Length: 394
Ligand SMILES: Cc1ncc(COP(=O)(O)O)c(C=O)c1O
Image 1 (cartoon, helix red, strand yellow):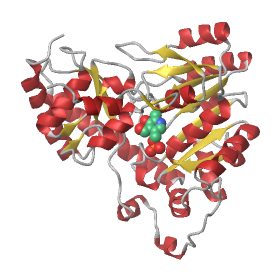
Image 2 (cartoon, protein in one colour; image 1 turned 30 degrees about the vertical axis):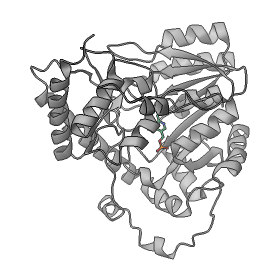
Image 3 (cartoon, rainbow, N blue to C red; image 1 turned 30 degrees about the horizontal axis):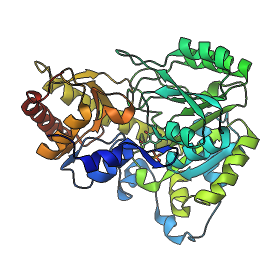
Image 4 (cartoon, rainbow, N blue to C red; image 1 turned 45 degrees about the horizontal axis):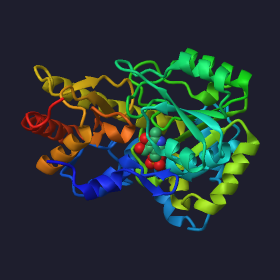
């Protein structure tokens, strides 16, 4: 069945002049609440407030908290805890706490880029930053990752830094949707060249801590210039999207202050309640337990996935080295938006179509669900793909 025209027009085109529709978020907003099993998520399944006690977080004193505006750039306790995540390489005064990393990305784009600026953007990617960059009139050039490894194209980036002298480079590391991430050496090389050329490096590091191999190092721990920004938050690795806590951390006080001033127009302050809870969550022992939880959940689901795959030529997954999702090629069709729509319609299983990451012929499948739900959802997905395969051709 074709994708209904009405659905297509809510996924493609512009929201307002210059701002592309955010396909992935629209796709999820329209379907996730009615889906039987949501395999379109990118983080690990959320914790309850009660379960936080198992990780050593007591929220008893939260009852006494005055629900005022609090600290508009985040409380000193929370910013101190965030600074420690970076090995104290970022001054807490250069950190701005935001409503999720989504708000941090908005503040960063508005602080860094303006009309006519050339900017290099990692691709495939979560399309928020590129959409916002287009809204402000920046000239977006994509740094295309290639299969089978989907590594960041470092040599191409170095070459373009010299040739185009862009204003900034935006990298999602670990990458969404491919889960590939840069080595320390690669980030060092990029940072050195960016410093030489006076280019700002913006790393969205919201999946930091999900790496299944060598642990990732943040741009903030490597950059020797002040022109870096790390964006991150509690939604994905920590399984706490409902707190809506993210942040930006930079070496530049003036950049932090500019982002903070723009925040006056957007959300004023983070939720005082979430700020208090998050400063307890970001204590080093809790951070390490929650990061282990995320890796455990994903590893278990990948085992299930691998046990169900043999003999199946329905999907050709990239073994994501990080992230709570699997990026997979569909070897028998490039029309993965239509396929994802039909999968959802026939089975109630929601996946994320590659088209929403500018890459047709692929799907992103969640690996962050409770394992019993993942097993049912993934089995059903394979069955549905098998049923649909004949009605699709390359
Ligand atoms: C790379 C990336 N950045 C930012 C976000 C926004 O997440 P949140 O605002 O919940 O932190 C997402 C969500 O999927 C993401 O994948």
